[in-house]
Image 1 (spheres, rainbow, N blue to C red):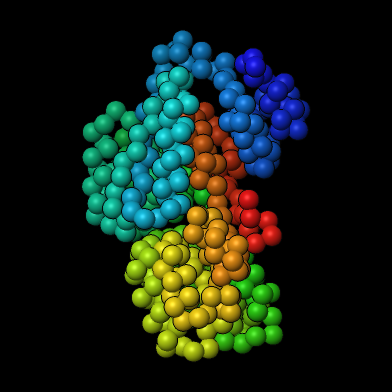
Image 2: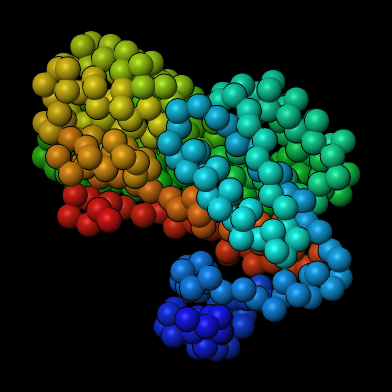
Amino acid sequence: MGRATVHDLARAASVSLATVDRVLNRRGGVRAATIERVEQAVDRLGYRRDAAAATLAKQREYRLAFVIPTGVNSFLASLALEVRKLADVLRSERVFLSIVEVPPFDGEALVEALDRLQSQPLTGVAVVATDHAPVRLAVGSLAARGVGVVTLVSDAPGSGRAQYVGIDNSAAGRTAASLMGRFLRGVSGHIAVVAGSMLLRDHAERRFGFEQVLRTEYPNLIALPAVEGHDNAAVAETALGIELDRHRDVVGVYSLGAGNRGVLAALRKRGLAGTVCAIAHELTEHSRAALAEGTFAAILCQDPGHEARSAVRILRALADNRPFDAGQARIRIDIYLRDNVP
């Protein structure tokens, strides 16, 4: 099979050549969903742009660091894997990606990692941020040095970052509540909420959106104060178990972070699997199995590959002082039920 062409991309993505050209050259006027279709075609067909040759001719290098928490969070592990895949693909275009690992839920370690990056010859930084003052200051310091910074998954507005790349987490929480209300129509009781940490902006926004919809549209369902599982299965199991034992009228569980194995264990141990309506985030090996067996009613998901690619596109545009389409950074919220799980 010969090298893929723009004509192949247009056919694979079911778009015009003009649209392919606009996406490849990062011009505006293209819907986010269409951009994603073209990018998926690029990945699937192994298309290599002529821009690579132009970049080589200019001897332009892009050195981009991704700061990602380590641990047992399957989604963040998937994000890191997507970055590594991109690193292999983009090396020929003189785009060099590195991953800086930090402990989860450790703001001091995150600040130290960002401070260390200031002494490195970086073009841009993508960071899974926590929204507190020292992190915002560290991000602002990098930006002041001319390093483009984007936040991933969880935002830190007011920090000097150029763009947030991720889903609308308030909308995700509202979506979870809307699903919960529909699944539990005519039922009254408490909803247990399990977060990783309420210090994370994405978790706080999901909780806000969730309670907003329950209070206004489903007053028969009362959200309990969120318990923190720190994305750890054992901690999440204990925290949720205490809630289930304390409140015997729990009719639903919203797991808005990681630690879903602990959520499942707490439900199964009490014989509540499949009887309590449970909604969670991210399609992993364990959540997929729970969805198939009916323990989880729905999974809200975001595409880590889309996030990684969008972050790289924006950081390259910032380095070249080119405009970028902010719409490309808006990641869609996928909803999976047992009937449509891939």
